[in-house]
Image (cartoon, rainbow, N blue to C red; front, side, top):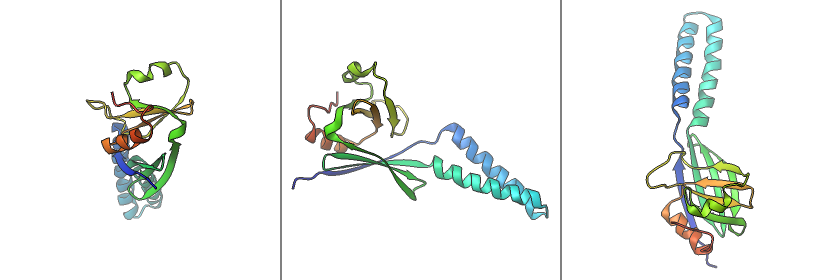
Length: 165
């Protein structure tokens, strides 16, 4: 059997608002914790609530995406805080319409479509554009940030659907 296996890991950046929220929650947790250690009960209760909220925010703002290509299928996993993994997408290449860089002219025919946009990239525009997109079953636009090896593996299987411009 001729199977190709390629993995690609992309870290999603932390927005400025999320970074500010992280710092603010840590300050509240420490402040109410100190007041709670001084003998006050209510601030200790608030410190526990803010501590749980801080853990939750840290868990959901440190995100990575792992792309896996194996046997004519692209699978996308979301990794939270480098400890918890969740499958967020599985895409069969037979159902993919076009796979090209995000700003490619190959998407001109798809501009007026009303589709659901799913972004599994770092969310940051780079020069040259490193993000790719593909339309899946006509109703979904999926944005990825694959490596060169990942693109080559997909292109070997579906050469008429994959463009590198």
